[in-house]
Length: 233
Image (cartoon, rainbow, N blue to C red; front, side, top):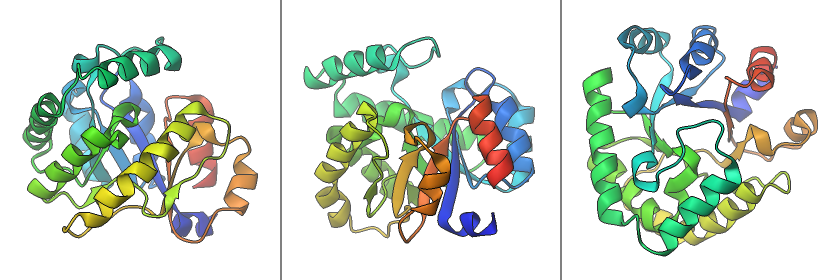
C-alpha cells in the first residue's frame, strides 16, 4: 500500500535486547521500516550494528531506566507489574531527574561509541519520557546533542482502544504540550503517535487515520506484528 508509506512512520523498538534484532534486520533491509529504536546498553553484536547502519534506516536511541526502576528487561514481566513498580518509584521520588539525566547522558554517549555518531532521534522504553519530570530531561538532552527527532506527536496520541497505557499517555501528552511548545529549538516529530498493540482493527484504523503522518510503533519479534509490517509496508 504505497499511500501508507506517505502517511505512516513505521517505527520498531527494542533493538539490542534479547533476540529482537533478528526480527528487525530483515525488515530494515527490505525497506519496510523508517525508524529503529536501540536499547544501547544491551547491544553486544557489532556485526548487527554494521548491518543496521548499512540499511540507511533512521536509528533512534530508546532511552531506558531499567536499572533505576528495577524492571523492564524481562518479557515475562506483566504490564501491570511494570506500571505499578514505576508509578511507585516516580510518585515517591525514588527516580529523580538528576539520576535520569545522568543515565540518559551515558546512553547517548554509549550510542556514539557503538554507532560512530549520535542518534537520529530519542524515544523511550515503556514510554517513560512522557512523564513530565523526565520529558523535560529528554528535551534538554535532545537540544544539547542536536538530535533532530523526538517521539512526541505534535497533534496528539491516538487512543484507539481501552488500553490503560494509551489512556495514561494521552493525559501525560496533554501535560507536556506547553513544555514542548515553549522549546526554542526546531522540533521534528510525527503528527500523531500510536502503538500497534493498542489497535483493535488495523484495517479500520488505517482507513480512518487523520491527516498528517502517524508514527506507529511495532515490536516485530511478535509474529503478528512482523507479518503486518511485511505485508502492509
